[in-house]
Image (cartoon, rainbow over all chains, first blue to last red; front, side, top):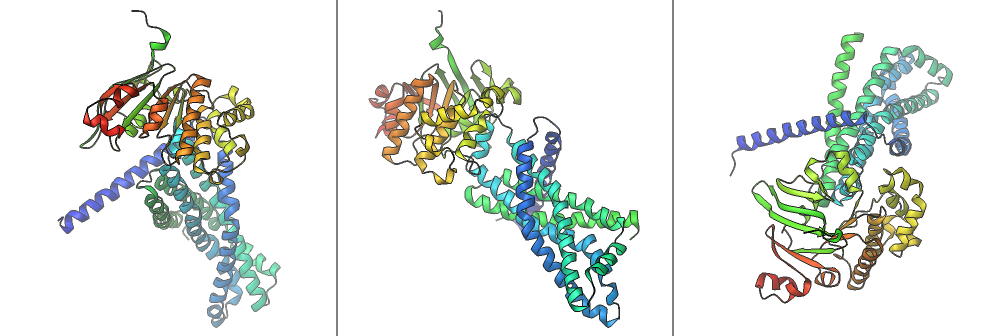
Length: 261
Length: 246
């Protein structure tokens, strides 16, 4: 029987091996994304699948996020007589941090697991092999298009989710604080600066890239039959979620240096 | 001696070896497939049949040995040359491997994407291929709306849509009922006659081998154990060979 230290060493080794394989996979993506042929039709199809079909989920999540955040914050701000700060506080929090992270996590579940399961089942049912023997590069057709689509669609979904969250917040303010929508959104626009919007948008591209990369990586190299498909789907969500927080930390750290928030 | 066109192998494997760690799957397997011929390879599960065809299609790298398809050494081809060569080979997968997010039409159009000339005639080619397998009516259905036998036929239509010179069948009748198996075997014969392609058939099915094989190779422990016509092998007194025909 292996000792605990040997088991730990093996786990560390396989962890770093997987990081290495993921880095190689990302390298292959960057190599293939700029070479012909380009699969525009499949890219558009994936953008539609990921973007349009996630709108409802992101919209509902964003709306509830705005409602709940405002409802929960209101009593505390009222205690200090600072309820007029509500639009500024909510908009900055949502646009800078809560919106991108929550929506990216939702998309990791919706998009990342979908990619992992789809490619995983294609792998175990030999559909990827069938693509390869028909003379098509499956990496370019399946992986590059999905990573690109996730990278392009996530910022749009996050902007949409943030906007819906602010509408949710405005409704609560209108109902509870009798603040008109016009006044609410004037205050939101006054409060937000480019230093809030640009870093959040830039990091959302990285969130999308991470979701696409990990989902395709787990699905493309799926093993162990149908059990492997479940594992690929599950691992895509778990690893992506962890990676999103790492990316978020790095993004906040960099923004803190450049914008001195 | 002057070689006739028919005796020129379209596919040649010499001393093919492939291992996964300490597991030596192929230990020097060889074959020659001639133009218009149907060669059946039989072997027990784990004897290396699937690994052999994966090496043959370039899905797995082999450790040593020669794979030559239509005179081209597989190991010397670039990826684009290999992809070009692959368009001349039809492949019927054991589980059909239809793309389940695409309709039957899109499945059949998929191999045509890289050939602009043929892509222009895609509608006619798709209908012709589906008529060859007797299923023109399923053109707009999704794969999950088809039965197992229909899926196998559609997969066969996809394999022949580019009118390949070689067709590789991986367990073409596995998982099908006896009647559907017979229909698939008959289709394979019809396609062989219609297109004149060479066929390499991997199977466990003795009935399939009896009907379709011009020649057979028995693969045991990753090497050629016996070779000959169905009748020759079926009459063999070797217990390892007899085991296949029980």
